[in-house]
Structures are given as C-alpha cells and as structure tokens.
Image 1 (cartoon, one colour):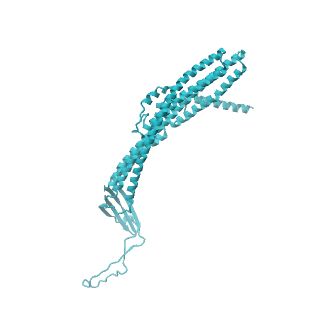
Image 2: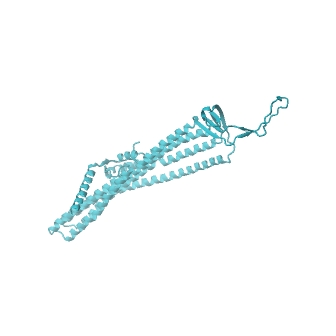
Image 3: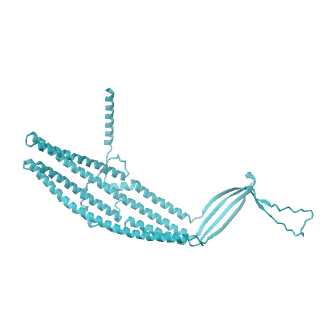
Length: 457
C-alpha cells in the first residue's frame, strides 16, 4: 500500500513539474508578415533553393577557369619486361677496312633501353580558339539565372503555403470562438432553465432539451479545439519551428474584411512576373545557346600545349647514380572536325525539336494560367457576395436569437424556437468567417500565379 502511494505521489510530482515547465515557456506571438519572414529564413526548402544558387555560381566560376592555362605535375614509371631489339646493317664497301679490326656480328640485333624508365615534369595546355567552349560560358550564366528563378519560385510557393496555414489557424481560432460562445449560451440557458425548473416554472422536458443542447455542442467545441492545434502544428512545420514551441497567431479573419473590395478591384492579372513562364523562357534561352554551341562543334579548334620533363633510365634502383636528362617542348594543336558519323548533326536537330516543344509548352502554359486567373477572379467575386450575404445573415441571426430568448423568458416562446435561433446564429457566424477565409485563399492563389512577392527579400 505504501509503495502504491509513493508511485502515485511521484507521478503527480512529475506531472506538476511538466505543467510548470510548459507554463513557463511563453508563447511566441506571430502575425502574417512575421510568419512569412520566418519561413523565408528558416524553412529547409527555401534554404536548399538558396544553396542551389551558390552551387550554380561556383559552377559558373569553374566554367570560366577552362579559359586559363591548365598546369599539371606528372610522374611516370615504366618497367621494361622485354627490351626492344634493334638491327643495324654495316656496309663499309671494303675501301675503309682497317687492318686487324674485326667487324661485330649484327645479325642477332642489339637490345635497346634499360629496365627502369622514369619521367617527371610539368605539362601545360590552354585553348586559343574554341568557339564551343566560349559559348558554354554563356550557358553557365543562364544556369545561375535559372537557379535564382527557381529559388524565387520556391519562395513564392512557400509564401502561399504559409498564408494558407496562417489563415487556417485564424479560421480555426474564429470557429472555436463561435462554438465556445454557442456552448456558453447553451450552458447559460441550461442553468437558467434548471433554476426555473427548481421553482416549478418550466417542464422537465425543457430541462432535458437544454441539457441535450449543451451536450450536442461539446463535440463541436472539442473538434474545433483540436483543429486549432493541428493548424498550428502545420504552420510551425512550415516555419521550421519546433512543434513543442507554443505560438499565438495575432489577428482575426475579420481584420481582413476591409481588403475584400479594394483588392478585387485592383487585382493585377499580368503574367510578366509569373515564375513558371520565366523558367520556360530561361530554359528556351539555354536551349538556344546549346544549339549555337553544337553548331560551333563543326568549327576548328586551336590549343597551345607545352611540357618540361626530366627523364632517367637505369637497370637498378640506385637513385643517387641516376642521370636526369631535361626535355622541353611547346607547340600548337589544331583540330578540324571532318566526319563523326552524323552525331553532331543529329544533336543539332534534336535540340531544334526541343526548342519547338518548349515553345508549345509555353503557349499551353499561358492558356492554363489565364484560365486559372479567371477562375480565381470569379472565386473572389463569389466570396464577396457570400461575405455580404453572411454579414447580413449574422446581423439578422443575432437579432432573431435575442428575440427568441426574450420570448422564452416571457413565456410566449418555446425552447425549440430559441434552440433554432441559436443554431442559425452559429451557422451564420461560421459562414461569415468562411467567406473571408475563402477570399483570402483565392487572393493568395492569384498572387502566386502573377508572381507577386508579398515577403521581404
């Protein structure tokens, strides 16, 4: 028994310590601009895109390095397994015979060379005329531009996801407030009816219905609370934050209702900044430069080469006795392409087809983007109408609930009327918040399509 009491006390103490630790951690207050700034600096996807730019810049520097002389130090060793045989013919014509001299027998040949062959030195090379190489430098520059545009695309996409998540948190918060107010009203009505029932002023049926109304709201309230937690988790994941870090999203959806009409009337529908079209244009530029580079492969190339080496040959490994003989050379290397089996010509034709394909893809992309813009504009217009209707609906529903409550208190109305009025008011408030949320999402989608940047660089 004592052991069980000790275990329960320990568990209770640990629970208290954990609760104290969580309460000591102050929640981080974040508004929309703050969320966007955090995402642009902490989200891994954005960091990867920024690192890709750095990588492409290094690749560009590496491409320019090919224009400079390439100097290498080389060392070679060769072991002769079978020496080369050299044959020599002597024809002295008899007139130059030397008395007493014997001519060597050359019929078996003479072995040439030594067993160990050593070579140390420097080699250098530098392109002088290479049109294809020069054109590849412009391709490297376009690669950097494409990486920058891809990074911008990642940030625009990330901004859209952060906005959706942030507005999702605001919608969840507002929905929770609506259900919390509905729960408070139901509980207030229950307590009032319970008091009247104790005085014999209302029937037991009314008390039961009031109790059922409270219990019917509880699941919706708990679900709304859970949705708030899930929405915050999603937002923290996008911001690259620890999921255990408590946050509060500042503001309400009603703070953005002033933007509904102004943003719709001044909506920018130009596709000049659209990142997808910009990427297609940069890819088209890369293909055109690639085509020029492939055509330049038909032109001759000229390179400067040179070397300075020390050579040594010996039959043993007594390095101190080696005699190192210097050897140097400088020259030009001219290469004129004559025949390659049609590979260069086929590469040119293949690139030309790719350019035509990309042009068709861009044309189709423009049509789809224009269609998307019209759809989002229509969604925004519909949301404005829904907002106007929902706003009037909330006003009427609140007025109806107040009237139904007074009628029931006066004894001229029924509990059913008051519950119906409460339900209508709750639904009207949810529709009001949902209309603002849907408008802000459609607006955010529109900003992504037109390539509008709503975050700090």
